Image 1: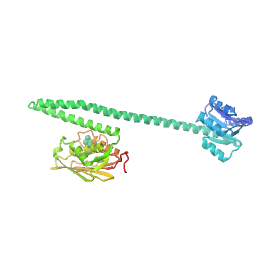
Image 2: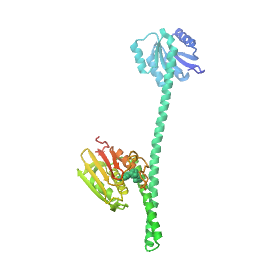
Image 3: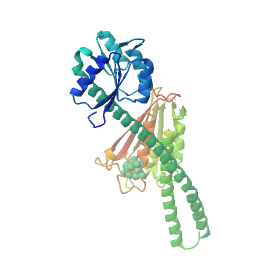
Image 4: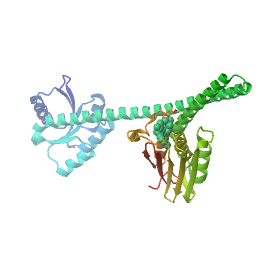
Length: 380
Ligand code: ADP
């Protein structure tokens, strides 16, 4: 309004003298404006279309047309043009009703000095509203974009990891063949083969972790009555080819009920990651490496604990062990993803994971999961 472009004012007013009065008040305020007067529904509608006002000033009672109808017509044409009621006298009730219907302000003709401020105020409010809407739209667009990028990134990570595993498995097969060929051959060559196998298994473990991560991010929960004992046994059995498996005394204790409503795949990965860590981080200098997995399921919750007497974790590192890519010991040959994925999955199952560890003594991870109902809603 304060720019040099004159403000376009459409005045719905049938009394010529009142128009003059209004114009004088605005001129006195130094307002640059161009006014067009109309006095019927037809000319008002036409004015909105062709004159394209920046603001509408409307008298209340005109023959066969009133301000409320004018407001409705105005909003149909242009939702954002400020509409100010400028009228002789109206009841407070009527004025409030007009504001409720979407008028921006009302000014009594007996108090026209307020009109310039009312116009400025209404224009400012509309401008602020427009900026807010634009900001909201930008935010929404950016959000949609982010969700799309996130999805694409997850799919990308998934396919790359998936596709990388196939050639890796071929190399693994070829090394096995080469090992067979040179069974009685060069010892150095055999040692190299062993080292190659070790590296390939490490790489494959990382790829499997990435796949688990993106599967967790991408796929919805699949809830069923899970046999807890069976899931623990299957996850643990998958680890029997791990280095150190034979050195560990494993005990599994499942108390109370054995079935629990949750996502069996995710529960399996959580157990697998915790148990494999207990094996990896066993204390080779201890006479007996102990590992206990306990679970107790009730109707409401499953409590799971994985406890070892391994190398433990320094208290300084404890707050960070669930972070992505964080490794708390040089003993780690992994990518620092196992616990991060375990926590992500626990959270997806709306549960909680905690750790209690003492360096040199051992580590205990505790997971508490609420029962999840088939519709994806948990009990807590
Ligand atoms: P990674 O095993 O690939 O390093 P994780 O996310 O599984 O990554 O674990 C993060 C770190 O937490 C490990 O590097 C290790 O230092 C520590 N940690 C995890 N589990 C145990 C455990 N049972 N005993 C001792 N340290 C552990």
